Amino acid sequence: MKVFVAGSGTMGSGIAQIFARYGHEVYLYNRRISSADRAYAVVEKQFKCQADKGRMTAEEVTAALSLLKKTDKLEAAGSCDLVIEAIIEKMEVKQDLFHKLDQICRPDCLFCSNTSSLSITEMACGLEHEENFLGLHFFNPAPVMKLLEIVKGAKTAPESLARAKEIALAIEKEAVVVKESPGFIVNRILIPMINEACDLYYQGIASVEDIDTAMRYGANHPMGPLALGDLIGLDVVLDIMNILYEETGDSKYRASLQLKSMVRAGDLGRKSGKGFYDYK
Image (cartoon, rainbow, N blue to C red; front, top):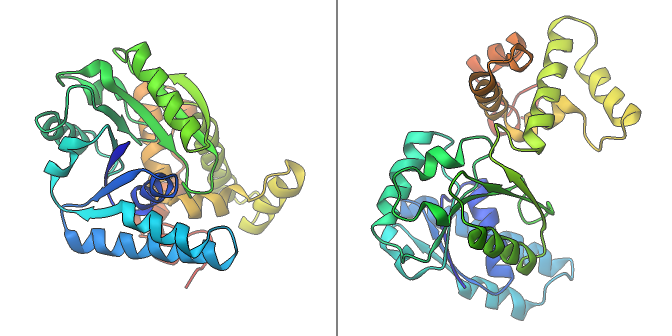
């Protein structure tokens, strides 16, 4: 299977790493080839770490890297069986990308978005083969996290869902199928929990450390909600909360003022060096 991954950030490079590891030819796309080069270097480093830990042989690393190709040309998607989009979480940008790919890809190419909360139906609207469009939502870090949410849009064909399930099986992911809904399953539950933790801190009910300790030892979570927000990116958490609120109109999805304040200040978590914790 030939796979085209659009977007070479954390999620795009992680998804590309998975498919190359499982023996599939992968085109890792970014409109700036320098960004694709950096992503390739990250994947190469990850593979070598796996080899150092005895989880891959040197031969397997060489084989996987030979399957991973960097490109700044959308035309590389023309021969691919599967397209996975992992670019910025903006509907108009994603739509523009897929409409361009619609003119390049084969009619039987499966189009997938890694969106964490946006409408699959809206994203597919106007494409020639909307029945071939669905969500494949990987979780960060993609090579490690076992879950894959398969999201069915209004016009997704049963055959496309069946193909997605086969893909999940081929890369050893645990797949769940969900009808389109804001936040799907995990983020519909998880992100409001992080938002609630932000509010607890904002109201002075407990410290950051005590909120996280309470959930780690009281709910057996491996990581506290505020540390998890830092890992995800507080800007991403805010974007998802805003989408949940806009889509449902339910006040329980109103973003915490603490969350808004931190994002405005540029304290986004690990990626900026500071969030609820200091990573500098």
